Image (cartoon, rainbow, N blue to C red; front, side):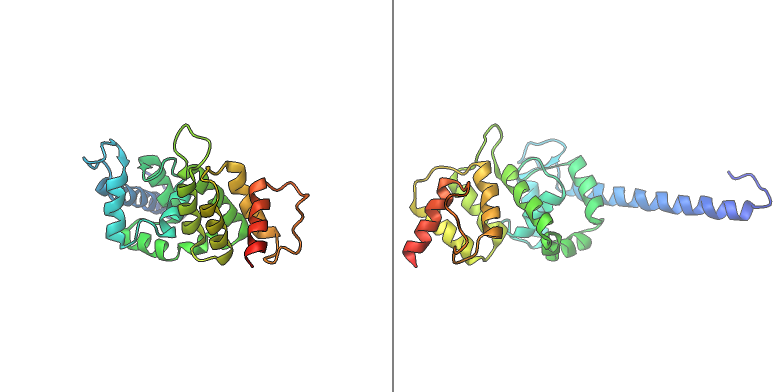
Length: 220
């Protein structure tokens, strides 16, 4: 209740404005919670209080999006997901607030336009580095080669330089990919010309990158 003074009308307006803001926040939370409840606690997942793999499958099915679409990985990045194919309630609520999605229609629009989230180089780098930790199994330090290749394909979609890199990796020994190699590969793409004319083997590139350059020069 507002005490009436000479400025009581003004105070009432301020109080009403605050009330509207609070109600809008509550609507956001309630909408996010309802969306979360719709896909969380799937009995086949056995992950109480979380959206698990089966819940994710139902979500993507409702959004009409393939599981290997890059937008799914971008969503995981924006929601700061700690585990593959899982969203905790906090990740979901805070993430939906971050991307301003309170309904399935809004989330559908976000997914369709998700590429805009990684247009600038810094955002792409953050997304790229997140992907390594997201893809990495718990209590491991690196990615097995098939997983790394699968994620590179998702992240870069169609990129002929990355396609060459993958062809090279598939022909060489099948050892995994370290975090340093993952990060440095993006630096390599961003700093070295396609014809390798500015590539200096004396720089601190990993041996794998040196071998890749030799592979490309020999196959041209």
